[in-house]
Length: 141
Image (cartoon, rainbow, N blue to C red):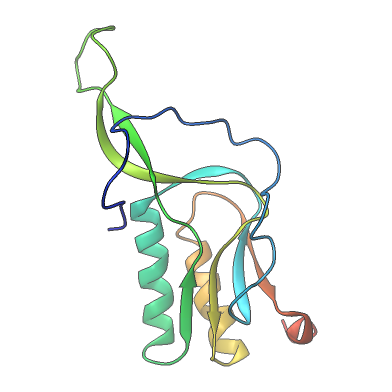
């Protein structure tokens, strides 16, 4: 599971995820990518589920790039706890993903295999996503 080695502060606020992604809107490494169409907090478990799905489809061929990292702690209060008494303990880690961001990229594989892997990965996400292709490959996708 992805998580930071060290953090400056144990608990933090989660900023609002409004608007479009500032960067990472285009492919930078691979030939095909997965672009989200809604903003959401992506957990480390969701990143791992998508990573495993893509790597199972690619088998030993091709290369995959993960373009998000869960660096924000998500806190929860214990069950059946009354209000007050401070902020809860960190339970898991999340990454703030704004709409339009490319979160996964793959390259070095055929078009059919790439589209099949990314289509299966879309089903692991709680939001709508689309498959994007590099400029020269758009007619094929």
